[in-house]
Figure 1 (cartoon, protein in one colour):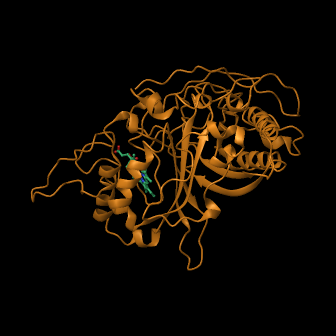
Figure 2 (cartoon, helix red, strand yellow):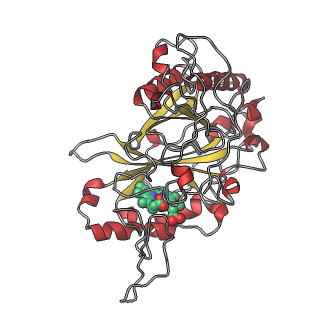
Figure 3 (cartoon, protein in one colour):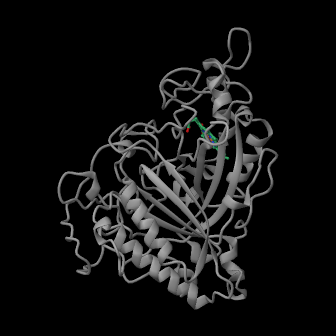
Length: 419
Ligand code: HEM
């Protein structure tokens, strides 16, 4: 698998505002997950391999100064290899917010994106020093159905944008579902992330109210670089994920056709899936592995081999039973048509312990795809019907956003819709 090429420039336009030294520019292309092939999770590891991300600005060794360019045909933060920390902020537009207000807000947020992701303070930043180590900060914006409520925007809403159909195992809580605008903030450093989050909220309050915030995490950078991440059930999670160089990737992930403003954008599905970890802990190792269809030790299919090997769904045990259980998660989640694949980029979450000491923990399932009705919904229906995992998980939050294409210097995220 080759490292995808970049079509973007590096860094931000010159801007001397603020007290932070301008980063020197060094082209850096490291080996790692993207380059290592399919077994490395597409979004694990730290080689920046997305279209817009194979350039890292770095002044000196140190992950704090690594940046991901905010520019490109797609927004950063979709194919960017996972950072260690993430916050998802959902906003609701204030009543009577006009089209001009929306535009001004997006221009302001895009200015924050340009500055903060390149190690420069936000405008009138009260703590400019906290912006100086971007640590691969990416900020990605998305629009929920409510963003299109204005009569003039209604015809621009993609058909698939809105609440997902109800699923049997959903126990949705509106306080972590929906939202008119999503701001996804990912970073390798929690302090930089906290500062960016605060600036983005500060610059939003004239236009929108905060609906919910959800935080997620992966391994700290440097701990398991190049390895596929693990979720809180202990499973290797992210192995069979499409890679940008795979045939059909662009068709599966990036929007094309109508509405035309979204070309080069994508749909983002976010599901907050709670895990019953205390109950899961009591399950035997064999049962845990049967639930997924892969080994806990290294993520290899139960039909043998290595993590990157394809599961053999027809394999039979000597007693005639399927080696991979008929209701195993990987069997039901699999699709044969490459255009139906989704790009998973989830984060673990833990907001507990709560009440009886059990953790309020699970997976912020985050996936990008061209069309959730065609891609996410059929898979989720199969999982909802029969997935063995359903005994140990409940989806408690759900939201879908249209993620506009990327932008270039002088532009802003959402310009294709609002200009
Ligand atoms: C807490 C909930 C979930 C957990 C713990 C979980 C865990 C896993 C694990 C361990 C794998 C195997 C390794 C890999 O290929 O990544 C996997 C595969 C997969 N999961 Fe999930 N998953 C969850 C929810 C979902 C949901 C909601 C969907 C989509 C509706 C989904 C779609 C997939 C897909 C498409 C694959 C790859 C299947 C293949 O092609 O082999 N998962 N998941």
